[in-house]
Amino acid sequence: MSQVIYVMGVAGSGKSTVGRQFAEATGLPFYDGDDFHPDANVEKMAAGQPLTDEDRADWLAAIHRFVVEKLEAGESLVLACSALKARYRATLSAGIEAQTTWVYLEGSYNLIKSRMEARKDHFMPPALLQSQFDALEPPADAVVLSIDAAPEVLVERLKEQVLR
Image 1 (cartoon, rainbow, N blue to C red):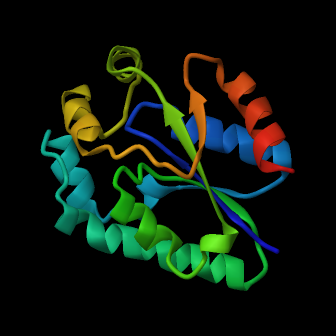
Image 2 (cartoon, rainbow, N blue to C red; image 1 turned 180 degrees about the vertical axis):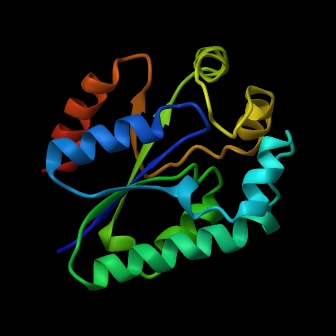
């Protein structure tokens, strides 16, 4: 059965890095949820304004449609997406719950802030990190990985826990 592995967490937690490395290690295609944002969302975040639930609605729906199409075609995939709230995750997994695995990259505010300050050319400014933590509803039904470990270590842990 095809499956989607969503790698979630706040901005700067390493979703794209870990998701991409996991996809490469397993031969699955990788997609970044950021690529599904409409220009208006990217511009808003780049201007230092957090997104509202209304801003996120079309973005989440677009990701869900894309994932469902892949699964219906018999394809598995890895997708990085913040999915901060339970209702966002419900939207993303609606009708495909049995084919969905959540991976939550958990880390402290200070560690993630330092990572965000070090990265270049990303539309999400560190000033918005607190809004991400404020919105975060940690999942109860996910593989939880502490980002204190290197991405390579997290990928190995994921392979052990997700590829049973």
